[in-house]
Length: 609
Image 1 (cartoon, rainbow, N blue to C red):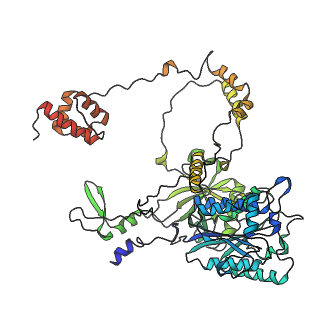
Image 2 (image 1 turned 135 degrees about the vertical axis):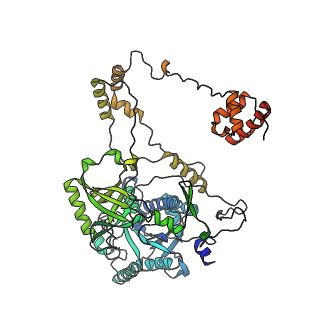
Image 3 (image 1 turned 45 degrees about the vertical axis):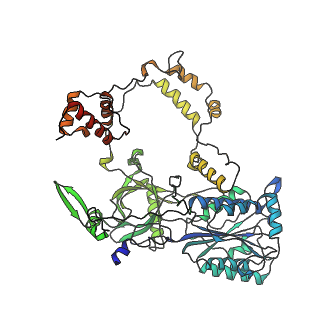
C-alpha cells in the first residue's frame, strides 16, 4: 500500500504549489508569487499634469490594471493586493491601523477586481476615491505593518514576495522623525521576512529626492541583472509601466547547472528562456451540473483478470532480434542516463564557424548563479569578456536534465545594453545555441530555375534596401492571441463588445508604395514580358486532375483470397467500392475493407473458409 501511495500521491488533493521541474539534483521552485501595491492617496497624487496629462493616481491605476490583466493571462495563481495609505477612512483587518485602506486583500486576481480598478480611473475615479477613502494623515510605518499582516495571514507557500510603493512625496511624513524611524524599522522587518520593497516614485514639482527618506526603506537589487533604484522619477505612463514590468516578474531558471571549465573548476550557472512562444490556453473541462473543473485519473488494469495493476507490476519491453527484451523501470532509467546534468567545456571556435543553419531550435540564456558557488560571477564575467574580445564561442557538451541525451552547444557571448532610462534591454551572458548532429543534416535536390541577370539582381537589391527597417520582436503582437483575450475580457467584464485590435503583421501598403516609388514598375519591366498581368492564371500552370486509381477484378480476387486488402490504400479501396457498387457509411480503412470483403465474397462466390 505504501508503494501505491508513493506512485499516486496527492491525487485526491489539489496541489497548492506551482510545478516547476528543474534539473540538477533536486532543485524545484514551489509556491506562488505575490505582489502588493502600496499606493499613496494624498491630495498631491490627484493633481493633473501639464497639457492634460493624467494625474499620478490615474497613471498608477492604469499600471495596476495592466498588471492585474497580465497576471490573469500568464499566471492566474499568483496573489495580488492593493492598499492605499494616507487616507481619511480606514479599512483593514480588525481596523488596527488608521489612515490605511485595504482595497483588495492578497488573493488571486479576477474580473471583479479589474472592474474595481476601472472605477478608480479618470475624473469619476478620482471623485469616487475621494468619497470612499479621502485624503488624511500619513503613517507609512502603519501601512507597511498592515502589509506584513496581509502576508502573515496567507497560509499558502509563497516563493516570492514583493511590495511596490507608488508616491510622489519624497518626505511622506513632512520631516516627522518619529514616523520616519518607525517606517524604517518596519521596512527592515519586512525585508528580513523575505519581502522585496521597491519604489515607483512619480513626478512632483521641484523633483523627487530619493536620499531624503526612501533610500533607507527600499531593498537593494537581488542580483546584478536586476534594475536598481532609479534616481529620476517617472514622468510618463510608458516609463512607469516599463519599470513595473521589469520588477513584477521573478526571473526563474529553467535549470541550474555546473559549467565545468576543467578538472575541479566549476562555475554555477542558470539557464533562462528569454523568449517563449505564446499560445492560447488549453480548454478546461467542467462538470456540467456544478461547473467545477473535471480532474482525470489514470489506472492500469490487467486485460485478462481485470485487476488493478501496481506500478511494480508494469514492465517495459523492446523487441530486438525477434525476441522481446523485458526491462524493469530502474533498468530503463539507467539506459537513458548518459551522465549527470551539467555543461562540459570542450574548446573554443571562431565565430565564423557558427553558421545560420546550425540554429535548429530556440536558444536559451546562460547567467552565473553566485548563490550556488561563490566566485561564479567573477569567473563567468572573465570568460565572457575574453570570448567577446577574441570573437570566439565556447563549444560545450550540455545535459540539461537528468536522463536527457547529451547535446553539443555553442556559448555565444552577449554584452549588456541599457536604454536612456538605465533600464536593461539585453543582459550580459552567453546565448546557448544547440548544434545539430550529423544525422540532422539532409542532402536536398533543389529545383532549378533560370538564373536572374545582374541587372535584375541589382534592381531587387535596391528595392530591398528601401524596405529595410530595424526589427524588434516585441513590436509585433500575435493578432490571433490578442483577439482571443479581447473576447475573453469582454465576456468577463460584461463589455458590450471586445476592444478592437491592430493587426501589426499586415503590410503597410501605402508606406511601401511611397518608399518604392517607380522601382516596382522598373523591376517588372526587367523581369516580366510586355503586357504581363500577375493576377491572371498562367496557361502552363493549369491544375491537372489526378488520375483515378483503379484495380482490376483479378487483383482484387487475389487480395481477398490472401487476406491482403489492408495493403491497399484508402483511395484504391474507395475506387473499388465505387467499381462494384458497394455502399458504406464509414470512410475509415477497416470499414471500407469489411464492406468490400462481404460484397466481393458474394461477387466471386468464394467460400469464406
